[in-house]
Amino acid sequence: MFFFSKKSPFSAESTSEDIGLGRQRREKRKRRVRRVLRVGSWLSAVLFAAWTLHSGIHMFLQKYVYTNDTLSLKRFTVRSQGVIPQRLLVQWTGLKPGDNLLGFELAEIKRNLELSPFIAEASVERVFPETLSIHVRERKPKARIQLLQLDGTPNGSIRLVPLMLDEKGVVMSRPTQGEIPISMRLKWDQLPEITGVNGIPIHIGRAVDDPRLKAAIHWVTTFQESLVHSMVTVTEVNVSEPDVIQVKTEDGQKVLFGFDDTLAQLAKWMQVIDFGREIGRRLSFLNLTIPNNMPFEWMPEEALQADERRNRTQLPTLNHVDV
Image (cartoon, rainbow, N blue to C red; front, top):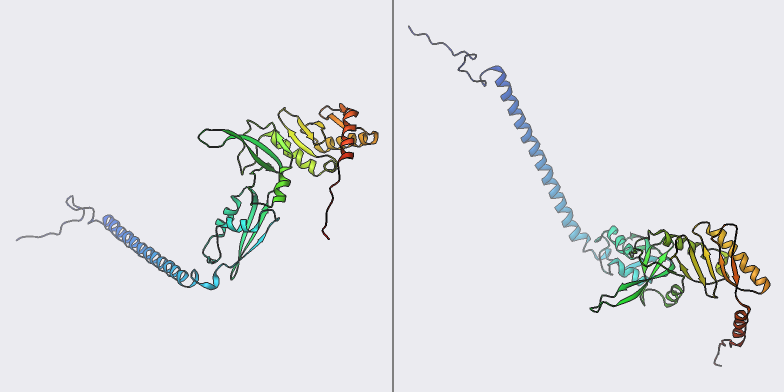
C-alpha cells in the first residue's frame, strides 16, 4: 500500500515564496506595483489635461486676443522731466502702433528703457483698450569728464571722448545731436569739467568707484545747491592730487578744498568773496585745506582795472525790431 504525503512547506526543498513571510513580501510587492501604476496613471491624466488646457488657451489667445483689432496699440502716454524727446522714449520701447497690447512683456519694455544711461528708472503700464503708459525718471548730469580712447580706426588714433556724470556718479555718454534739445545740450556742455581722472576705470552706465571721483561729484552737487553758485562759475574741478580738490573759476580764481565738510568750506569761500567785493578786490587763490587757517591772494589791481575797462568798452547787444 502506497502512502502519498503532502510536502511540508518548511522542508529544505521548499522555496521562500511558499512560506508565510515570502507570501507577505509578494503581496506587498504587488501592492507597490499597483500603487506606482495608479500614481503614474494619475500623473499622466493631469499632464494631459494641463497640455490640453495650455493648447486651448494658446489657440484662444491666438484667435481671439492677439489678432483682436480692438486691443491694438494706438497711443503712448509719456511722463518724464522733458529732457529726452518723447519720440525717442517710444522708440526705445521697441514697440510701434498696431502692436497688440497683450503681445509683449512689460518687464522687457522696462528693461529696454533702462538700458539707456540717461534713464535712472522706468515703469510701464497697459491702459486698455489701446494705450501704453510710460513713466521715466531721467538722470541729470552734474559734471563732465573727458577720457583718452582709441577711435577704432585702422590707424588707431587717440581722441578725447566726452562723458558726463550724474549726482550718484553714474557715467553717461554725451548725447548726440537730435537726442536732446540743442539748448539743453549747450547747457550740459557748460557743466564743470572734472580733470585728473586718467587711469581711473570708468564704464558707461555704471557708477564710479574711485574715492576721488566720488568726492568731486559730491563737491559739485553741494556747490550747485549753495549760494556760492550764484556768485561764481566753476569751470574745472581737478582731482589729480590725493585728498585735495582744486577748483578753478571763470574769473580766474583757484581754490583748494578738502574732501570733508564741503558746506563749511563753501561758506568760508563765500565770506572771502564778499569781503573782496567790499574792498574792491578779486580773489586769486584760496587754500581751505589747512585747519584754522586760510592762505589767500588777491588778483593784481592792474588785472582788475583791465577787466573793468574791457567791460566798459564792450558794446551792448541791441534787439532790432522791424516796423
